[in-house]
Length: 115
Image (cartoon, rainbow, N blue to C red; front, top):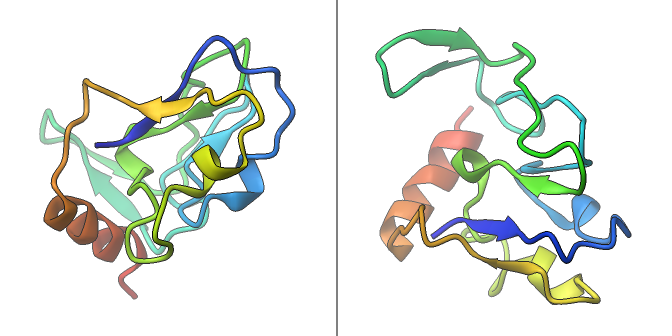
């Protein structure tokens, strides 16, 4: 499953540079699919296609956040999620709304970084 950052976040920023998928952003910052990935376009759930570099609305305006569609729990890069490993207040936790198997996370990692 993807991870999320809870409201207990102290905005220290330790997690952001650790993410190999560039899935973590500062509160209020727009994000794009292409940030740190090989994606040039993405087909959304409704069937529409968006350019990979199109800016998306922030998930949170108050604290750092994780884009669940880009989070692979560091599968393919590290043995454990690096954001959770460095978080001083343990606010990087599994997101129950995005449960994924190890195989699904591996496929997502390959999709994000295919060249």
